[in-house]
Image (cartoon, rainbow over all chains, first blue to last red; front, top):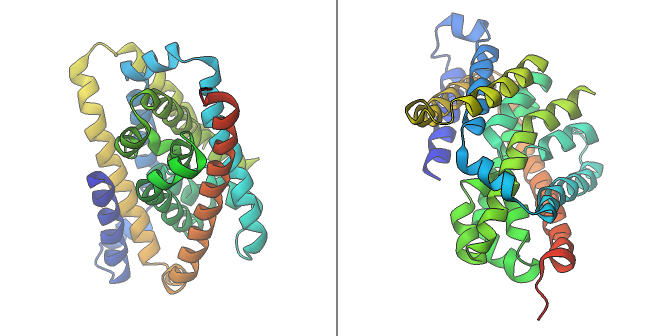
Length: 200
Length: 91
């Protein structure tokens, strides 16, 4: 949660500096973000590749555990598709791309702004941050009424890190592995799915 | 965007290769955080200079929350069935 707060602070600081024109002109005119994104994605890759525990979990996972991230993907897409019917400004493709962030707001919002512009990027940011917050708040409720996979499904990509503590608290340790597994799979898929949905 | 995805894939292979070099592995997460801070700061700037976004922030936010609601409810309801049919231990 602490790091989420720092990330949002940097975003808000950027807005304020942009809003009041507190910036050297070159920073506004030149788009450095694509280069920063190159570096970020290389690092994210290295982070996933070098994570021994993650590989261990992926290797020893039972086959049916794959149903959990699959549930998140299909469920999210059905849900946002229904909502997109009622939204005038956001079409089905854009809604699916935002849903495909699965709570991984930093990466998905950056990707979506690069491909479809800042407006959609901001919607993706707000939407995916709220997915994390909703999971933190409603995990007990989801677990009670929708069973033990529900909080993991709600957490999406965050179920491997930021929402893992609350999930483990309410579901028990035996669901921690499932939670981490689902989070890892979704985290890896986010950049691919978002790009695929918006570009093809 | 293909470049970005290729870089990530190269990163995964690279990371796999350096798994046992714990000093480098430990420094990855802080570096990721810095890159994310820079990118969201830059995204913030482009949002801040964009008057259309700023003046429509409430509508954008409302649409974002609706999409979150849909996404969460969709996955939670489907998770109910996944749990019931595949994970629930029979007593």
